[in-house]
Image 1 (tube, one colour):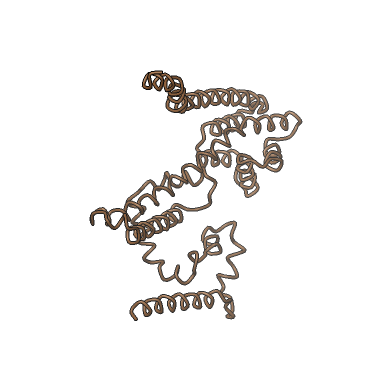
Image 2 (cartoon, rainbow, N blue to C red):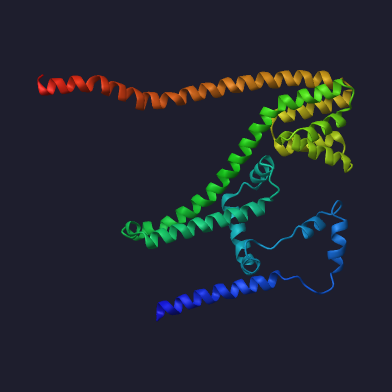
Length: 312
């Protein structure tokens, strides 16, 4: 009877939360408020309006998100204080091309940690081998699983940022040559950047498209390029923006500057390729030394050992 009552409570709770979620998703029939009517028209001048329009309830269930928001907010702030590095997280998010804030990322990291903690607890409670472990180790295992989930989410962010920066570094020489060709054809620097942004589909072209958007919004070209360089924190892109900004300030021919930088980027790409090949060559020695060579020696010596042991 106790097990049946427990299942009844669990199913009833799930049914109630599901029905409540469906009710919360139904549109309201009341008159819209003034802020609801005004906010969409001032998105380009008000960050508060953008935050209000883009405000969403916590995924995946609105009701559960609303109920657990205070507790999850406290846990998110606690996780941020424990792990720290808000500036590094913001930089990695920008480098990875994500629009999340550090608080939103910490919330997702908290969800990963809680999920890993729950999975570790279930394994400890269900697996027979885990139940045979000492009690202190059983208590520590879910905590270690939760810590691994949090660190794993941060490692995935770092990997995404590194891979995106690597793609930008590989795209930079082609983008610079395209800009040089457009400038040599008589176009201005802004028109050349716009042409690259609209004609290409890479990560760097997408960032240049953001620069064009900022310029159309009234931001000076030099300031938009500097903002992109700070956002990416990639040395090659920083050199590109510094040289373009310096050429604009001094009135130097930008085409020659970009042509020289494109050549430097090609040489740097060759050096990076040689360095990567050297690292891969060393890594290839591991299976050769520890797998292929022992098997070769074994096949060479084993017949002789068999002959010596059998006496034939």
